[in-house]
Length: 97
Image (cartoon, rainbow, N blue to C red; front, top):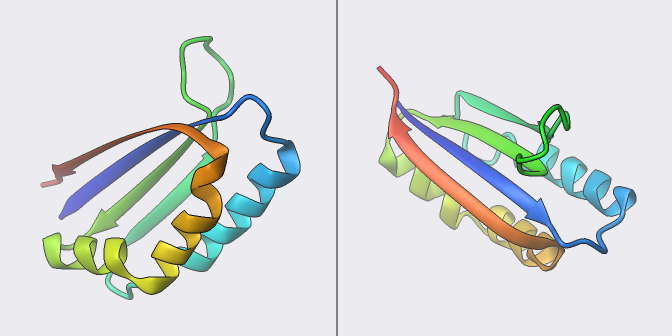
């Protein structure tokens, strides 16, 4: 299994309703690749000062499923819509035993 963790920092001018619209958009991505076994996302709890604004955790059974998600037209459309809100993105993928 491959786990992808994505962390997001929004541009300073991004409003709460724009972040909510993005969260609703994530909900639409949950089932675009039926083999995805985990899709979680949410805002940072602001417990510490040195964190990112938002995170996603997605588990894929294999690289093929990861690429199917990454290249899916629904995902690409989502990215086109919401990337203008984002200042920085960090991603990591690793194998889960």
